[in-house]
Image 1 (cartoon, rainbow, N blue to C red):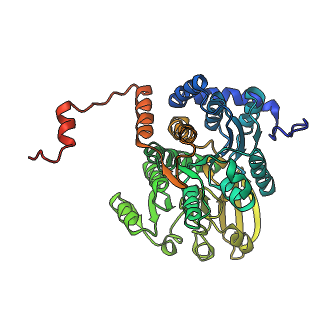
Image 2 (image 1 turned 60 degrees about the horizontal axis):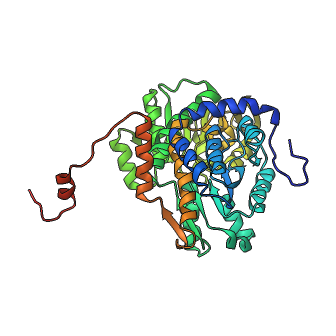
Image 3 (image 1 turned 120 degrees about the horizontal axis):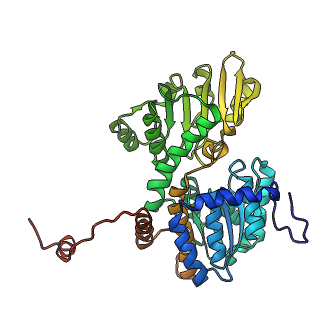
Length: 425
């Protein structure tokens, strides 16, 4: 539904879903102790008082805790979806009804609605943009350059978004600071690897109910997301094949025990294909032509461009829904290819995204990166900035404490030795 007040305050599916959303948000909170501690501190210190924040994220139970933390810190925050199929409608309703946070997101929204919501996020005249794929930042630069003067900076937590920000900087249009949340150790080592690995297979199993053991699963790309996906698929008994363009990652995949092939060869062997590259058309016409009858393709990269669905659609004589989030494309040759989640993020389209425990660290990075921008307003140069090591380390320590795990510390002698060049064997 859409609010009827003079100023549009939200656009969510149904506010009556709020009680269920609140229940699920509270459940996720059990696994997010780091962000809870940050939220409690924010509530006391109000680091975002007077700051307008526009956040473009997957609207999930975990994102709800980030939004609540930002508001606790005094932010005037607006939340939109970063993907048309990733919104959890009950969560969106709860944030509006119970926390008075303006949300513009509905699961299944079309592209026009999505882009209209991006414009609404920019109508908020943000001082900080929390982005997921850099669509809001790209739209700001291309369509509303006059608003850049309002901006303190942006934070970005996806590989795709970081690639786009680097391209913006090379082209001379990224004229403000951008925090590289994605490459923080407490983000990509865990979110990208363990989060993507588990949630991707969760989404595939929910969409298809197929047995993965014994299947030839082709993982397209062996970055951190690909590593996690391959690891989990192997653990469930699959025969994992990796395709790569990077020779170092290819060697790593071989030494991790996986078979590495060009896509031209893997296409005829695979039973299930999972793309995690962040690039365009890594599965395309020539690959569809040689795939097995009944081959399944899905994507766990950020945008829905990794699989060339336009060409696949042109090859099809019939497209039908065979299960929720599962479409069968019947080709002229008579064989079929099955596409999951319309080529969008399968872990969010058909499942619930990453587990809360891993998003605890990712969103802790987002919250602290936004605070870092405010603290250092006017001091940071334009371009990408890494999360400071002390913030990364602090998040890890808070997570360990919450897990009840203790680690060693250096003795004075060890600290002196490790920092000296004069001590030898």
